[in-house]
Length: 251
Image (cartoon, rainbow, N blue to C red; front, side, top):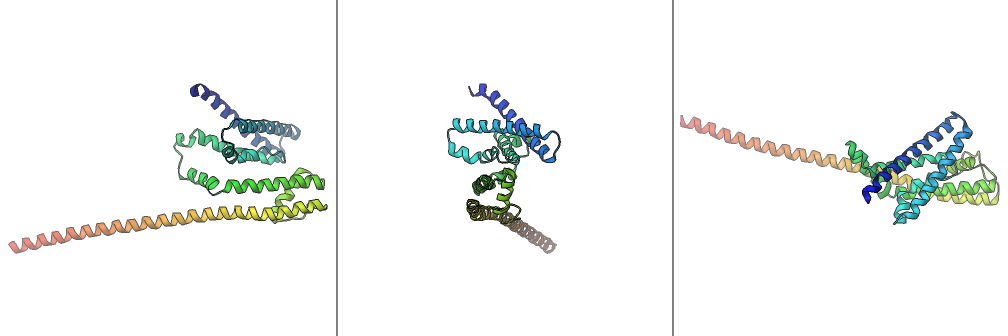
């Protein structure tokens, strides 16, 4: 039964790959202002609906929804209708498909960096912190847009500059509720983005420490091996000298 379903699964994954790449290219064309913007915007909305339905269907049929939410966090970010730029998060789906079909292994390029990527994304908790940080920014931008009567794009820009403590000041809240949202975003943004930054720093520092320790261990092993060879050569030289002395004595 599984063998009969596999061609359909491959076809589905190929379709997802094509649609993902299409959505990314389409958004890129929108940013570069190449082509008809209205058509590209309609395509972006259509693809958004397709990926939203796909995500909802997979969420319904999955057996372990907790694992699904963790592994598909970037898929959820990719269907946020706040700004077309969120389509770039769909590229994470391609990474999972590559791992699912073992494409790197089949091509002979799988190595330590793929394991390091998986360890960084999941084991360090980066995926949780990043998802929460984005959720706070998106929710704040949406509420800011409603209360301050701003566009979603301007509200998202305001949320990002506020959460990262840049605060250019080109967009500021004027209503009481807007200021409450800003206060919530400031505290939440500083907390989770700070944790996000420290997670990245700790991972890089840990990797550097492990590499340094591995290099030191290798050097120590080389020194031990060299000393062992020196001892062996010394023993052979001593034996050779003894044989020469015996030859001289026999004469």
